[in-house]
Length: 156
Image 1 (cartoon, rainbow, N blue to C red):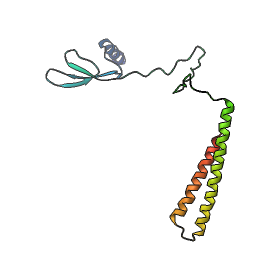
Image 2 (cartoon, helix red, strand yellow; image 1 turned 60 degrees about the horizontal axis):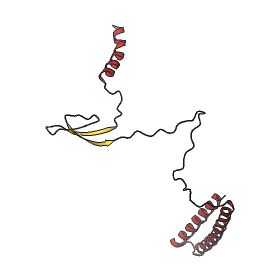
Image 3 (cartoon, one colour; image 1 turned 60 degrees about the vertical axis):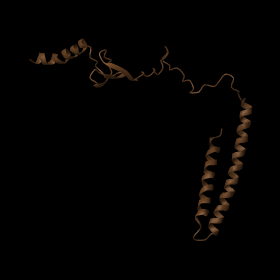
Image 4 (cartoon, helix red, strand yellow; image 1 turned 90 degrees about the vertical axis):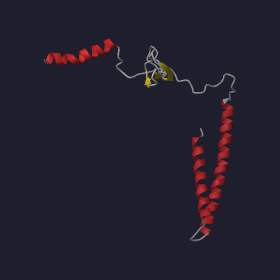
């Protein structure tokens, strides 16, 4: 008795293989079929006796890249490749641009720091109950100084 029960899963598996039933639900096409009486059936198997139209087709995902014989993954291509006729900037030109950008940011930072000091003075001179506009001005200039410091930190 125990031997027959232990063989039952194997027999069921063989029976499923013999009938051709799929063992996993990996349908790639979805059909909407209507029979002669007007009954609608949504299925992944097209039936010749029913009027079937394709609703959707599932495309399998592309392989993620194959390893070469040494086991190395191929280098990823950039999402938007640079055109061959795209103008190139020399390293000295880029350094000059970076220097100009740094100078502009430093001037803006100095201006914002001066504006922050003026806003703080206006806030303290307003007394114990300063207007909301004075507090907002201080907050705005503090945020600007913080943002400019972040931009300067990002430069090479």
